[in-house]
Amino acid sequence: MAACGGALKMEAPRNHLSIALPEGWRDESTILIKAPVIDMRMPFAPIFGTQREPLPEDFVGMGYEGLELYAQHHLRYLKREYENVVVEADPANSLDRSMREMIVRCDLEEMTVTQWITLSYWNEATVLITTAAAGYLDFPSLEQTFRRLRETLRIS
Image (cartoon, rainbow, N blue to C red):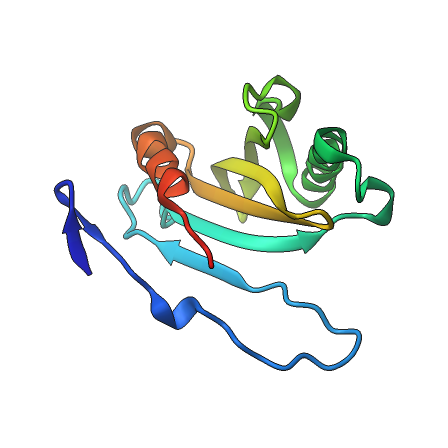
């Protein structure tokens, strides 16, 4: 780790993955970084994670329209999987067409959590998803940190 503008910069060469996948398998590697719990009233450690997911075949090759369709697809998934999902920032309102972002609040294991989710193309058939999550009381004070993490993210 090295200092970077008053913060520590982590170079994580161990995240460079090389593996021979059996036929039919796909790489869905996840990278997850975790902060300490900030407020014991919200005992949920803030996290920032990345993962890649294949696009549904119907969305492959559709460019930005496919990314928008996938964002709506992902939002429907969240509403099915989590309780009391409230969309605070809809992906359709993203200013950058090359990245869709949403902020959702939901109940997770008897806690209310806020998630900032970004979706961007990894390649024509794969989406890179980043998820930053914190207890809803902690999220406002962490949002800029999460955005800096996303801005500095580089995966080779």
